[in-house]
Length: 196
Image (cartoon, rainbow, N blue to C red; front, side, top):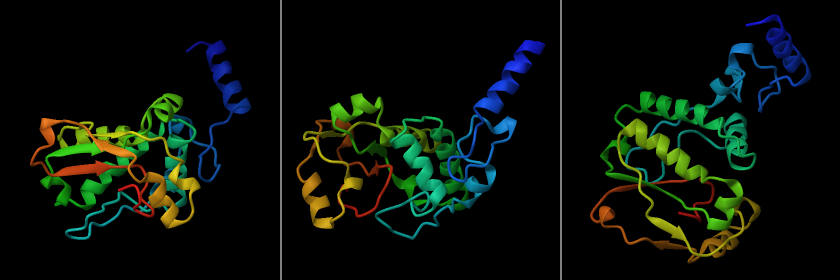
Protein backbone atom coordinates (compact mmCIF):
# COMPACT_ATOMS: atom_id res chain seq x y z
CA UNK A 1 0.00 0.00 0.00
CA UNK A 2 1.42 3.37 -1.00
CA UNK A 3 1.87 6.29 1.39
CA UNK A 4 -0.95 8.17 -0.38
CA UNK A 5 -3.33 5.21 0.03
CA UNK A 6 -2.45 4.97 3.74
CA UNK A 7 -3.05 8.71 4.20
CA UNK A 8 -6.42 8.43 2.42
CA UNK A 9 -7.44 5.53 4.66
CA UNK A 10 -6.43 7.38 7.85
CA UNK A 11 -8.19 10.57 6.68
CA UNK A 12 -11.36 8.59 5.89
CA UNK A 13 -11.28 6.95 9.34
CA UNK A 14 -10.89 10.36 11.00
CA UNK A 15 -13.53 12.18 8.93
CA UNK A 16 -16.00 9.30 8.64
CA UNK A 17 -15.37 6.97 11.58
CA UNK A 18 -17.17 3.63 11.53
CA UNK A 19 -19.17 3.11 14.72
CA UNK A 20 -21.31 0.35 16.18
CA UNK A 21 -24.97 0.91 15.26
CA UNK A 22 -26.06 -0.06 18.76
CA UNK A 23 -23.64 1.59 21.21
CA UNK A 24 -21.83 4.09 18.91
CA UNK A 25 -18.35 2.86 19.92
CA UNK A 26 -15.70 3.12 17.24
CA UNK A 27 -15.15 -0.17 15.46
CA UNK A 28 -11.66 -1.62 15.29
CA UNK A 29 -9.91 -1.32 11.93
CA UNK A 30 -10.32 -5.06 11.28
CA UNK A 31 -14.09 -4.84 12.07
CA UNK A 32 -15.02 -1.94 9.81
CA UNK A 33 -17.21 -4.14 7.60
CA UNK A 34 -19.34 -4.99 10.66
CA UNK A 35 -22.32 -3.07 11.98
CA UNK A 36 -22.04 -4.18 15.61
CA UNK A 37 -19.02 -4.18 17.90
CA UNK A 38 -18.07 -7.49 19.48
CA UNK A 39 -19.58 -6.48 22.82
CA UNK A 40 -23.01 -5.66 21.36
CA UNK A 41 -23.01 -8.75 19.15
CA UNK A 42 -22.26 -10.88 22.23
CA UNK A 43 -25.27 -9.33 24.03
CA UNK A 44 -27.69 -10.92 21.54
CA UNK A 45 -28.94 -13.95 23.41
CA UNK A 46 -29.62 -17.00 21.25
CA UNK A 47 -32.98 -18.66 21.91
CA UNK A 48 -33.25 -22.16 23.30
CA UNK A 49 -35.96 -24.09 21.45
CA UNK A 50 -39.12 -25.04 23.28
CA UNK A 51 -40.08 -28.57 22.11
CA UNK A 52 -42.96 -28.66 19.60
CA UNK A 53 -43.18 -24.87 19.40
CA UNK A 54 -44.97 -23.44 16.38
CA UNK A 55 -42.86 -20.25 16.47
CA UNK A 56 -39.07 -20.27 16.67
CA UNK A 57 -36.80 -17.26 16.97
CA UNK A 58 -33.05 -16.85 16.67
CA UNK A 59 -33.10 -14.27 19.44
CA UNK A 60 -35.29 -11.73 21.17
CA UNK A 61 -36.33 -8.56 19.35
CA UNK A 62 -36.34 -6.85 22.76
CA UNK A 63 -32.51 -7.05 22.67
CA UNK A 64 -31.34 -3.61 21.52
CA UNK A 65 -28.48 -4.90 19.33
CA UNK A 66 -30.84 -7.40 17.63
CA UNK A 67 -33.46 -4.70 17.04
CA UNK A 68 -30.81 -2.30 15.70
CA UNK A 69 -29.52 -5.00 13.35
CA UNK A 70 -33.00 -5.73 11.93
CA UNK A 71 -33.77 -2.00 11.59
CA UNK A 72 -30.49 -1.45 9.76
CA UNK A 73 -31.45 -4.15 7.25
CA UNK A 74 -35.15 -3.34 6.97
CA UNK A 75 -35.28 0.45 7.11
CA UNK A 76 -31.76 1.57 6.18
CA UNK A 77 -31.34 -1.11 3.51
CA UNK A 78 -27.92 -2.18 4.78
CA UNK A 79 -27.23 -5.71 3.60
CA UNK A 80 -24.11 -5.68 5.82
CA UNK A 81 -26.51 -6.87 8.52
CA UNK A 82 -26.76 -10.25 6.78
CA UNK A 83 -23.22 -11.15 7.88
CA UNK A 84 -24.30 -10.86 11.52
CA UNK A 85 -27.60 -12.64 10.87
CA UNK A 86 -25.74 -15.56 9.24
CA UNK A 87 -23.51 -15.82 12.31
CA UNK A 88 -26.55 -15.72 14.63
CA UNK A 89 -28.21 -18.54 12.66
CA UNK A 90 -25.02 -20.62 12.93
CA UNK A 91 -24.92 -20.02 16.70
CA UNK A 92 -28.60 -20.98 16.91
CA UNK A 93 -27.85 -24.41 15.43
CA UNK A 94 -24.81 -24.81 17.72
CA UNK A 95 -26.99 -24.13 20.78
CA UNK A 96 -29.89 -26.19 19.38
CA UNK A 97 -28.09 -29.11 17.64
CA UNK A 98 -31.27 -31.21 17.57
CA UNK A 99 -33.42 -28.36 16.32
CA UNK A 100 -36.90 -29.31 15.18
CA UNK A 101 -36.18 -27.24 12.06
CA UNK A 102 -34.26 -30.19 10.63
CA UNK A 103 -37.57 -32.06 10.26
CA UNK A 104 -38.83 -29.60 7.62
CA UNK A 105 -38.79 -30.13 3.85
CA UNK A 106 -38.93 -26.61 2.46
CA UNK A 107 -38.40 -22.97 3.44
CA UNK A 108 -40.54 -20.04 2.31
CA UNK A 109 -40.84 -16.41 3.38
CA UNK A 110 -43.39 -13.67 3.99
CA UNK A 111 -43.62 -11.68 0.76
CA UNK A 112 -43.58 -7.91 0.43
CA UNK A 113 -45.96 -6.06 -1.83
CA UNK A 114 -44.22 -5.50 -5.17
CA UNK A 115 -44.24 -1.68 -4.68
CA UNK A 116 -42.52 -1.94 -1.29
CA UNK A 117 -40.01 -4.49 -2.55
CA UNK A 118 -39.18 -2.28 -5.53
CA UNK A 119 -38.70 0.71 -3.20
CA UNK A 120 -36.55 -1.24 -0.72
CA UNK A 121 -34.69 -3.17 -3.41
CA UNK A 122 -35.07 -6.53 -1.67
CA UNK A 123 -37.20 -8.60 0.68
CA UNK A 124 -35.35 -9.00 3.99
CA UNK A 125 -37.37 -12.12 4.90
CA UNK A 126 -36.21 -13.77 1.66
CA UNK A 127 -32.58 -12.90 2.46
CA UNK A 128 -32.95 -14.52 5.89
CA UNK A 129 -34.71 -17.55 4.36
CA UNK A 130 -31.83 -17.94 1.88
CA UNK A 131 -29.26 -17.89 4.70
CA UNK A 132 -31.31 -20.48 6.61
CA UNK A 133 -31.57 -22.54 3.42
CA UNK A 134 -27.78 -22.66 3.00
CA UNK A 135 -27.21 -23.55 6.64
CA UNK A 136 -29.85 -26.29 6.61
CA UNK A 137 -29.30 -27.45 3.01
CA UNK A 138 -33.06 -27.20 2.40
CA UNK A 139 -34.48 -25.39 -0.65
CA UNK A 140 -36.22 -22.02 -0.46
CA UNK A 141 -39.27 -21.47 -2.67
CA UNK A 142 -41.64 -18.55 -3.04
CA UNK A 143 -45.06 -19.93 -2.09
CA UNK A 144 -47.01 -16.78 -1.21
CA UNK A 145 -47.90 -13.55 -2.97
CA UNK A 146 -48.97 -10.32 -1.31
CA UNK A 147 -52.05 -9.31 -3.27
CA UNK A 148 -52.92 -6.17 -1.36
CA UNK A 149 -50.72 -3.33 -0.17
CA UNK A 150 -50.79 -2.87 3.61
CA UNK A 151 -49.38 -0.47 6.17
CA UNK A 152 -46.15 -1.53 7.91
CA UNK A 153 -47.26 -3.73 10.83
CA UNK A 154 -44.83 -1.83 13.10
CA UNK A 155 -46.88 1.35 12.53
CA UNK A 156 -50.11 -0.34 13.71
CA UNK A 157 -50.36 -0.52 17.50
CA UNK A 158 -53.67 -2.27 18.24
CA UNK A 159 -53.74 -6.08 17.78
CA UNK A 160 -57.20 -6.11 16.16
CA UNK A 161 -56.04 -3.41 13.75
CA UNK A 162 -52.93 -5.47 12.97
CA UNK A 163 -55.15 -8.44 12.10
CA UNK A 164 -57.39 -6.23 9.95
CA UNK A 165 -54.33 -4.70 8.24
CA UNK A 166 -53.10 -8.07 6.91
CA UNK A 167 -56.46 -9.80 6.44
CA UNK A 168 -56.68 -11.41 2.98
CA UNK A 169 -53.47 -9.72 1.81
CA UNK A 170 -51.74 -13.02 0.91
CA UNK A 171 -52.56 -15.69 -1.62
CA UNK A 172 -51.00 -19.11 -2.14
CA UNK A 173 -49.12 -19.58 -5.40
CA UNK A 174 -49.72 -22.67 -7.50
CA UNK A 175 -46.62 -24.70 -6.69
CA UNK A 176 -46.57 -28.51 -6.88
CA UNK A 177 -43.40 -28.57 -4.74
CA UNK A 178 -45.33 -27.64 -1.61
CA UNK A 179 -47.84 -30.49 -1.67
CA UNK A 180 -47.58 -32.67 1.46
CA UNK A 181 -44.50 -30.78 2.68
CA UNK A 182 -43.59 -29.46 6.12
CA UNK A 183 -42.76 -25.82 5.46
CA UNK A 184 -40.84 -23.22 7.47
CA UNK A 185 -42.26 -19.70 7.04
CA UNK A 186 -39.59 -17.04 7.62
CA UNK A 187 -40.19 -13.44 8.62
CA UNK A 188 -37.76 -10.88 10.00
CA UNK A 189 -39.75 -10.01 13.15
CA UNK A 190 -42.48 -11.80 15.09
CA UNK A 191 -44.33 -9.59 17.55
CA UNK A 192 -48.12 -9.99 17.70
CA UNK A 193 -48.33 -12.97 15.31
CA UNK A 194 -50.93 -11.19 13.16
CA UNK A 195 -48.94 -11.68 9.93
CA UNK A 196 -48.60 -15.44 10.43
